[in-house]
Image (cartoon, rainbow, N blue to C red; front, side):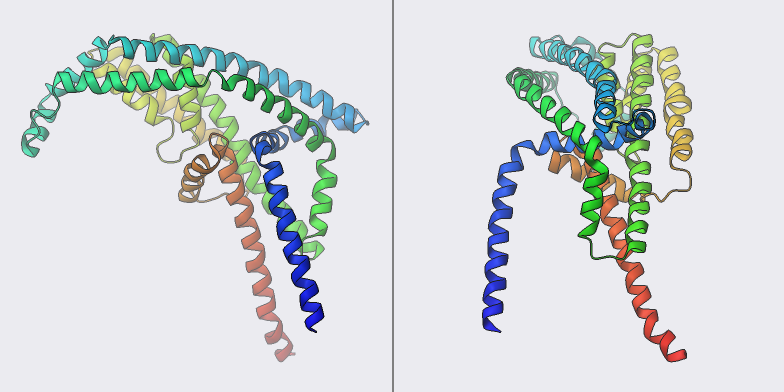
Length: 357
C-alpha cells in the first residue's frame, strides 16, 4: 500500500515538474497562440465552407489562411501604421504645447454656471489654474510620446509573433477537429454530457466572440467615418477606440462619441455636435441592438455584468487579446459549471427515483 502511494507521489511530482517546464517553454508564444485560437474560431466557418469544396484539408486551411491575411493582416497593418502616425502627431502636438483648442474647451467649461456652482460649493475655485492645467497636459503628452517612441523596437517582435500566429492558425484549422476529439477523450464525462458541453460552448463562443467581433468592427467603421465627415482629426484613432470600447458593456462606444458630441456643443458647433449625438444614438448604438439579437438568437448568452468583468479582467491579465480571451474563458467555465450542476441534479434524483420504484 505504501509502495503504491510512493509510486503515485513520484508520478505526480514528475508530472508537476514537467508541466512547469512545459509552461516555461510555451510561455513566450502565449500571445501568438492566443490570437491563433481567436482567429481559428472566427474563421472556422470559412474553413468549413471551403473544405466542402476542397477535399484536401491542408489546401483548405491554406486558402483560409490566405483569406485571413487579406481580410485581417492587410487592413490591420495599414491601420497600425496610420494609428501609429496619428498617435505621434497627437503626442507631438501635446508635447509642443499646441493646446489652444483643449485649453479653450476647458475655459468654456470653467466659465459655465454649473461648473462655477460645483467648484464654489466644494471650495475648489482656484484649484485648476491655467498653469497647472497646461503643465499636466504637457506631462501627459510627453509620456504618450515616450511610450510611442519606445514601442518602435517592438515592431520586429510583433512581426515574429505574426508569423508564429499564422503558422499556428494553419494547424488549428487543419487539425482542430482531431485535437478537440482527442481532448474530449480525456474528459470524465459521458458521450451525452460531452455533446451537451460542446453545444453550450459553441453557443457561448458565437454569442461572445462572433457577436462581439462583428459588432466591434462595424461600430468602429461607422464611428471613424462619422469623425472623418465632421472633420475631427485622427478618425482612425477614434474609430479604433470605439471598436475597443464596444466590448465593454454599459459604456460601449458612448464613452468615445458622447464626450466628443458634448465638446462640439460646448464649442458652439451645434450642428456637428447634435448630429454626432443623433448618429451615435440611432446608428452606432443601434448596431448593437439590431445585430446582436440576429447573431445570438436563442443561444445561451452571459449576463452583462459577467461580460463586463471578463473583458476588464481579460485585458488586465492578457493585454489587448483579453478583450476576446476573457469572455471566451469565462464562457467555457460557465458551460463546464452548468454541466456539473446538471450532473449533480441527476445524481441527486437517482436515489429518490429508486426509492419510489
